[in-house]
Structures are given as structure tokens and as C-alpha cells.
Amino acid sequence: MKILAIVPITTGIYKNESTWLCEGLEKYHNVEIIKVNNINENGKNILYTELKNTNINDIDLIWACYEKDTVIAELLKKKFNVPTIGHFEIIAPWRAEPDHKYTWVNGERDDYNVWEKDYINSIKSFVKLDTKMACDSWTIHNIEMLYGEHIPNILIKKYGIPDEYLKSFSKDTEEKNQIITISRLVSHKKIHHIICVLSQMESPPKYVVIGMGPELNNLKEYAKRLNVDVEFMGMVNDEEKVRAIQESMFAVHPWAWLPTGECAVFKKPSIVYDTPTTRRKLKNMPTYVRNNDLQKLQDTIILFCKDKELRKKKGKRAYDTLMNKETDLLSLKDASKFFFDIFTETLKK
Image 1 (cartoon, rainbow, N blue to C red):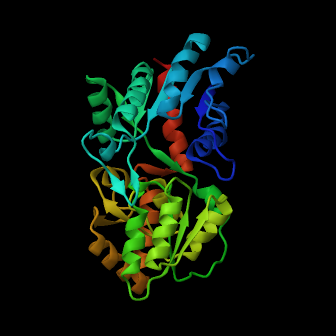
Image 2 (tube, helix red, strand yellow):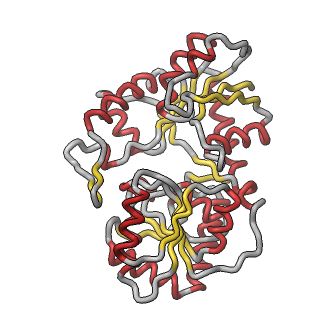
Image 3 (cartoon, rainbow, N blue to C red):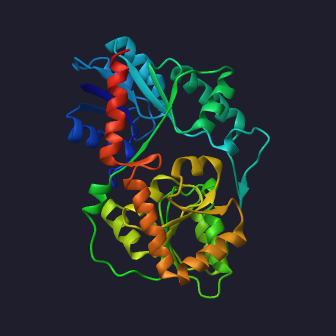
């Protein structure tokens, strides 16, 4: 099987999920994958122009890893005349409600009308794919709401966690009095909630944040104003990320899926906000706190800081749910099989 995979451009500092899955498919299923980027570092769309004159032949399948790539997949199908498969990532609740204004500090959500137009263009190409995937039923509902009619046969995507790769960086590391969040620094991830509750604790742990995003300066200023010890590590490589996870007592991810699975690989529990989407994806992997309940978030952080045995118990449960395929996060081997089976079925259409 030979697949042309349209993947997001990355910094190369760490491996993203698309890279993991491509490597897993090559390793476990002997799939040949040609990876191409949709855009270049300057944000210019270059893929279709470059591929029109390439000598790539005998492609069996075109794989659009995310919704922005489905437009290109539609164009490339005309060139290669092969089936297409693509994924539509989450349309989060706060983005699906035009009257809702999500604000924090001095930031505000993107203009809804611009966002809606952009996504409708992607949806028009998405519905033409031979095999369609979305992250969950909420996103399917919102895709159909924006499109204006029912779209049949959308599969729910499983996400891959590169457990073997991450474990290759594991070392005997002493646990520190610190907690961790791995996240894009955007307002809806609610990292400011964690800083807020830490500021109200008598002896808060050190807070380590891995990731970059437009809210970085706001978060730094907020932490400084509240006198909270936060280390913003920025964009780190996978070895540095693993070390930070192992050094932490536990993680707090108000809105995140993949980082919860990454921490579970090392039996580190995660505290997350309880939303229907997250619960459907993660099942019993994390410890849930009522959404936006800062007092409950603080109480749970304090409890986890004090009770080492509880952390161990929750960490083991997180690891077991991952390895036993009880959630929509899978080990890389299992996720690779999930995608290989879908690719195989797509080729039969």
C-alpha cells in the first residue's frame, strides 16, 4: 500500500501525531508513505503547485490528516484518481456558538463570521472524501450544522500515543514538588485557571508549562502578578518533555487529550475538566473536575499533592486504560492497526 499523506508542517523539534502514525504504519504494516506539507513556513499554499509536476506514481490512497488538507485532497484526487480519506478535528463548543464571546484577560475569541466561512470551505471538500473521520459525535453534529444537512458514514477517529518511542527517553528520575501542563497556549485551554488556584494555595508546587501560543505573554504577566512560580519551558523536544513528565507529581490539563495519554505512558495521572467531549474520548483515564469549578480544581490539586498513594493508584489506572484500549487514545501499535484497517476498507470502495 502506497499512501500520499498531507501532513501539517512542524518545527521538527518534536514529533506530532501525524508523524507518529506515519511511522507506526511503516513499522507495523509495511505501508509506504510519501509525506508532503500543505503549506510552507510562510503560510503559503504550495502543495498542489509542486505536485502537479512531480513524478510520483502508483499512489493507492490520499490521506488528508486534518480538515485544512481536505481541499488539497480533493484537487489531488483529480491528478491521481485514487480514493481519499480525511479527518476533521474538533469544532469546540465555544466555536460553534456565534453569540458566545469567550474572553480572558485582554484576549477575545476570533471573529465568528471569519471562522465560519473558513470552516464551511473545508467542510465542502470534507463531504467529498471517500472515507471521512471526525474526532467525536459533537464535532459531527457541528459539521452538519454548518453544512446544513446530514452527512452519513463519518467514522470516529482514534488517536495514537507513541508509547514505545516515549519510553525510549525514560530515565530513573526523582519526582519533584512540581506539576505539569502540556498545551498550546491559547485561552480556551484555561491554563490561567491553574495559575489562579495555585495563587490561593498556602504551599503550591512549582508549575511547569510546556508549549507555545499567543497567550504566552498574558500568562507570564498573570503568573507574575499573582506571584506564582511558573516555568514556561516553551517548545521542547520529546526527550525534554519526557523528563519533565517524569519529574512531575501529576499533570493538570483542563482541555487536552493527547498530553493526558502521554502522561499515562509514565503512570502520571491527569486532572481534567469534565466536558462531554473529553469524557467520551478519555473515559476513565483522567480524574475529572466539574468544568470551570476553580474551587474543586484547587481541592483536587491539593489532594493529589498530599496523597502519593492516590497519585500512584490514579497513574496506574491511566496507564491500564491506555494499554487495554479502553479509550479513544491507543498505543501506537493499536492506532496503526486502526488506521491500516480503515485504509484497507477504503481501497475496497
